[in-house]
Length: 437
Image (cartoon, rainbow, N blue to C red; front, side, top):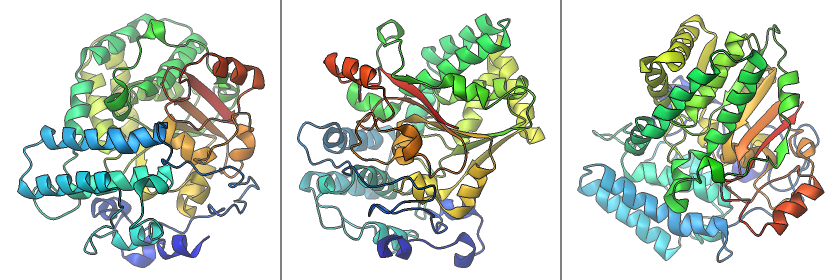
């Protein structure tokens, strides 16, 4: 581990006796020391190299990462500012963040912030430099930490703990698109279990298009009949083989977006429990609002209530999930690592042990994928299994493509995609299911 990382990491117990949830509410709990390799190219646990390809930066004009930092983030600041009746302090802080992005100089957190020590170590080589020269993964994570600071999410006062993205999430959850998707569950009620499972896995996968941050810059995702039906990689058969009916399996699901994505995720969880594919499911969510629509515990509750209140099969599903929570068959967990700017090869030991105890960990979405394989400019044909060997146990990635990083493709598929002339890596119109047993 590099000295910079080591200075920003400690164990949760050695810092103080607060629970992870209490510490996260204070601005990010101290993280347990990560295992595995560091971005200097050393091999992590499992032997998979983390070096070998350039780290994704945002400095290339016209590139997708550049557009996120230069266009999407300023647009989001303005939307958040307009979504709440913030006071003068919040307005000034948001304007200052806008100016900082325009001036292109990364500033540090205030020394009074509870997680200042960690970010001071994690970003010491980037502070004072260009946002676009920092690794894209780091810059994105740090932007959201700064945005939360600007609106007073972690500070004292009435705005403490108020999710700045809540209005967007709630509007989506109560929208007609969700209503239509809930009604569509009735058509699956009498389907054979295998057919229903295939459909629900697909719904969970393609639900990843429902990303509010993505839609800020890209507009609404394409209609279903315009979405590419073929996956760029499909290991779904391997996924189902890892979860045979009747096995006493614990399945971990690391959520991505709330609302229109989290609802089909929960419906898939219900199927796994109802048909004996899992004895227990642990659903991991973010401890703080990040990446606009990323799910937190409050979002899980909102989605469960939305299901319970719905008629027909959706309401029955919600009722089963509600009871599963009470029985311990479905558990929601979080960890401060999910809001730290690292890949999974650097996850802390306590989280590593949790994933190691699962029969399968399902990672949803683009950000989790980038953290799993490494946010680097890999050749698209580099094997998925090699880059995920560091992960403790079987892992599956369900993701629609909304960033440049992709691995594990067959050469014929890559050639066809490249010949299409479309922005297939970033448009959200292509998807993958990749599994490393």
